[in-house]
Image 1 (cartoon, rainbow, N blue to C red):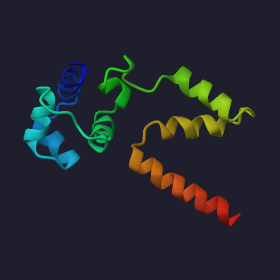
Image 2 (image 1 turned 120 degrees about the horizontal axis):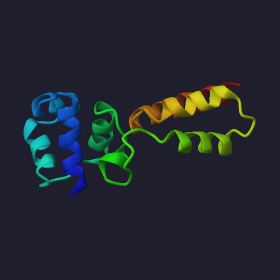
Image 3 (image 1 turned 135 degrees about the vertical axis):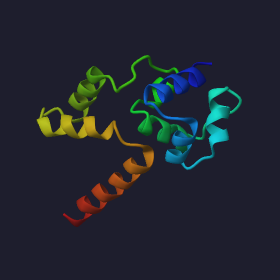
Image 4 (image 1 turned 90 degrees about the horizontal axis):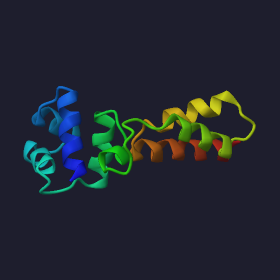
Amino acid sequence: MVFKDRLLELRIAHNLTQQELADKLNVVKQTVGSWERGRTEPSLESLNGLATVLHTTTDYLTGQSDFTEPDERSIEATTRLIFPDKNPIFTEIVQNLTLLNNSDLLHINALVKSYVEQK
């Protein structure tokens, strides 16, 4: 049960009570308690919210990675693949995007599409 342990560890490390974390995620305190006991699992939206509030990645929370933050080597490799001209602004953009939740990314994608269509 990696998720429940990592959630509890990060909540405590951020000096948050279950109630404070619940308030930030717009859920009830009992929901956070249920996640921490391993009785239920969060929705994808809540998982993304947890990662944002706890300054970590969903991969770390779910046990897919042992890195609490996005791996810089992965960011650089991804940037080189997508943007081979090595413009430093692309690296900065990719680093910033890794900090956003899915809802934010969808909003940014819509803005970029709209901008490109106007050009």
